[in-house]
Length: 156
Length: 156
DNA sequence: TATGGGGCTTCCCATCGTTGTAAGGTCAAG
DNA sequence: CTTGACCTTACAACGATGGGAAGCCCCATA
Figure 1 (tube, chains in turn red, brown, yellow, cyan):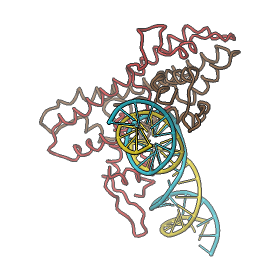
Figure 2 (cartoon, rainbow over the protein chains, first blue to last red):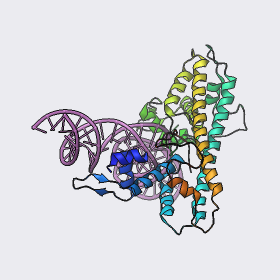
Figure 3 (cartoon, rainbow over the protein chains, first blue to last red):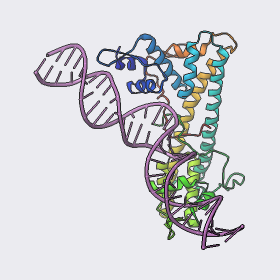
Figure 4 (cartoon, rainbow over the protein chains, first blue to last red):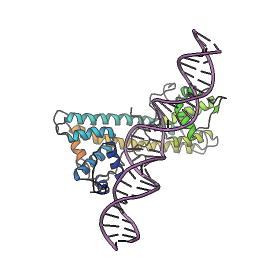
């Protein structure tokens, strides 16, 4: 099985398979005489494991732990569950942060009549610094850690 | 006003102020004879505008448009509102994707007794490829675009 | 006036997961 | 033997941010 077939079978792109190998997330695949990587069904299964873990939002770092537990026949299911619960907590936090953003924006959008005139409470709020319109005074640093590029979800 | 003072006053780090200048999001600041950047209150206000926009999750690309509208006294509030509504839609989509992840994970975690034994439905699900346990067959490519690093929220 | 400390400058690197591209080798079918 | 689809490596880019080094500037205090 060449890398392309393994990619199709696992849902992980050939590019990413090589990347995962380079970072040590997966062991180096076997090679043909001419240098092509070769994959067994077992390895494809591991790739599918990774793929599904990513679909659930786990960062690669955590997937490493999940894989270790997967391979460990004397694991404690409590350790797996803890990883899952941690991930759930992380998702919860991100969701509530985004929900807060959305609520603020919705509030502002509701107040904007959205016509040909230039008056706009959205811009007014953005320009007025720490949002005095509908909340307690937030002098300088809001509670929300501002948006960061940290690993998350597809936008497009 | 030096860059450090502008940073404190706006909530945007000096590092990011220079970055925004380098990308053209903000115009180049004035300089003292010895090369120090100098900021006026107007510029600090613009930085606060940016900061607040980032807090609402707008990508820098959209902030550029928001700033243009902010400066344009003959703008149509409809254009601002459209940007806000687009942003709301984006947040909604990301939230529902994360919510779906969370629900799947919660479902799996509920089924895991989380004790010293190795049996674990979470790992079983991850290993069994396209989740046959609680959903229609998803052969190969799930509907969800898998996790991507695209700009989003803080994790830590 | 000398010295020290803190702020400023530019430049480069790292993050995280993924995609794109370029330059080349390999394989199988025609 | 040619063609095209595949593989290989290596590098850069994305988004927004943080970190650090090397060197200059400004002010206050001894």
